[in-house]
Image 1 (cartoon, rainbow, N blue to C red):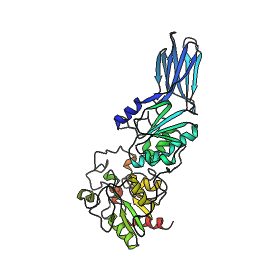
Image 2 (image 1 turned 135 degrees about the vertical axis):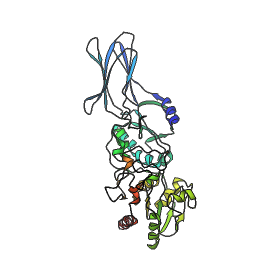
Image 3 (image 1 turned 90 degrees about the horizontal axis):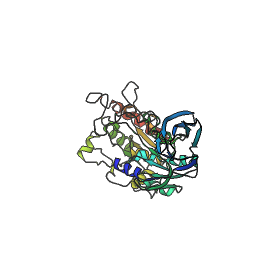
Image 4 (image 1 turned 30 degrees about the vertical axis):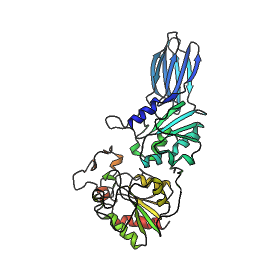
Length: 399
């Protein structure tokens, strides 16, 4: 991933907004931060201010001489005014206000994850509409969007790009010490919804927006009414860790006349995968394995509803505008999306929402920052009872 992003940045061909004033040429661009270069043979010394026009605060201020450049470290969108004062005369000799209208702006979505990509992508068009600019986007899954976003140029990460006025990278960025990198994110992304991260970086209003996906409904592959479940995720902390919980729900759905279809990549009958769920699930239709996301989407589009955890398939079901039941105590209720039936840790005194307080250690399967190796490990979801999920199922069936 890091190598791809480095290649991508090196392949950016900037379009400097160039102006000549008196003895000097001024060049400006907004590629991962506002940049100013002053060229000219006459010796000079200049005060440079990068000002946020929305609050009149100075973001960065420095002094440079001719034939030097300087850059604000803030890489997210700011409505900049760049102001240059000649320190020899005291005169303001150059100003440039951010204006992307009619110019090329490149937005890179720095995650391969299904949920991240689906959550973040819609705000590219919000930025385009706000600034009336040309938008170029790179995702790791362009095929999910290309047919329905004809006004967005989609490219592969690392592709050479010419003539850019600005570039922004949407993602969860951390500093080396594990804290939030506030040069890349304007605020702490753990304190608001995943979608809001994209709106925050791009400086657009946040409203929950579902992406328009290219997946087609080719008809049901399973006869009768059915429910899809996806009990697996990328971290044990994400799981519904109530012993026997999933089997109880499967049995309930069967008793109500529903077939239950398991659609995760992780397999039924695999000892390691089954152990994550407390044993092999029974009375389910097995559609586990390496199916395409288009196949998963088709099964979801023809299901009555879906039950999952904080994973990419929950995001996919939400994006398809299907009924979603999301079970999670690992993440706070605001973390994913609003349009769902959320089943959360029932007792506020029970440890929960570590996702919003700590940086997940993806290399530690048993990550539980407060209660690892104690009888309280994963209590956030152990305490979510099957009856709470049944209540959510019945609410979903009634609307």
